[in-house]
Amino acid sequence: MIALFPHCGFLSETSRMLAIAQALRARGEAVAIATHGGPYTRVLDASGLPWTLLPPVMDDARCQQYLNGIVAIGKPGSRLQPADELRASVASEVEFLRRCGARLAVIGFTLSLYLSSRVAGVPLATSHGGSFIPMVFERGLAPTPTQSPVPQLDWLPGFAKRWMANHGAPRLKHPVAFLNEVADELGVEHVPTLAALMCGDLTMVTDVPEVLGIPADELSAWRPHGNPAYRPGTRLRYTGPLFAKLNIPLPPEVQPFLDGRRPTAVVVLNSSRPAFIRRVVAGVRAAGLRVIVGATIHELGDLAVDGEVVVAGLLPSHEVMPRVDLAVIMGGQGSVQTAMCSGTPFVAFPLHPEQELNVALGTRQGMALAIGPRRMTEAKVTAAARRVVGDSSFRAAARRVQHFYEGIDGANRAADTLLAHAAATAPHATEPRLAVAAG
Image (cartoon, rainbow, N blue to C red; front, top):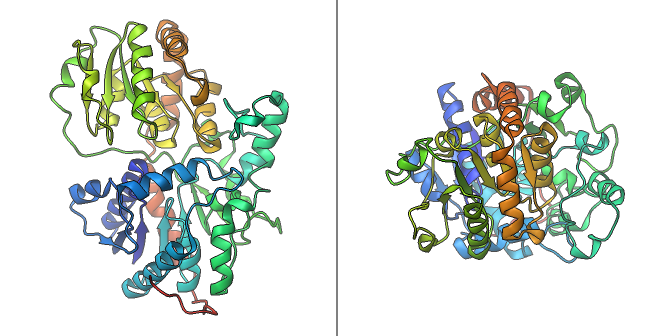
């Protein structure tokens, strides 16, 4: 039995866990899915797979707070979860792991599993780090950010900001203090740093060597070698792209925008505010493009007023992006890789260092432009959209990158990697010093 714990505040993460679950089931492996809730539990419902809602339940408002906390996680004074919520999460997760007899736990941003997996003696596999892994920092591959995580640092020269991007995460300890306080209560292993918060015992690197720039054999051979920034057992494995391929129909009102007769953009900015989306859409429209808006959790119907903008809900982005001229996204790995695998150039607004890296992988290939969200203006969006659509080199670069991903089934590779790791691992329970109390 392999247990998967999607954080359903993230569409990309929910779809990833479902893809992995389906690939595992196809191999005859029993799968259990559990979550603390969120707006995308409806995607779990639509899949037809059984799942369990664990206490404490995160409603939509709490999920939004959590997402905001993820964006701010490296900032001084930020704390992702209060201790009582974390204790209760660990209690319910430990009970679930033991009840279903899990031999491996797989997470995205359900970060309480860093503790509950240790209490239950179950190895932990992660995918939420994407390409934001130790070897990126060690090789100086993290980019100079489009904006500093802390606005007061924007004045620093580019070389200093790039140094911080590559040396900050393995040194930052305050972002994981909320976990380690409870880890001490339970007598289990700490999460040493922010960089370690992106890694598991098995860290699935959901990319390809040609794009990330790290050879597969070197990545698999990596070890912490006593580096205190990481848990000693951390291992890295390429599993390939893993992005949403939602089995939902294309809304009929979107179909006319995909006829190829006029330049068209798809705008999907799930992690932003409605006002931000409205300004971006206005900027794209000023560039002369029609716009498809994927409004997954926002009320944006007022944008569709002149026949040049259509507003839909959840979109099968893997079907839409190959048929448009431009994708406008935040910078999560799922949306970036959807564009890459579609051969579609993009403009992105990366919110935090992990997204900065995702977007930089596209800009380095010549298929994308990045704008810091704090620096976004309608005029900048218009200029970026005109440049990307008007310069054929962006489309040519996107098509070249598309070839790197052809024939790679990330879900199946992830399933094979998880099964191999589970077979090679002999879990043994760690007894906590204190009882885990729910509530």
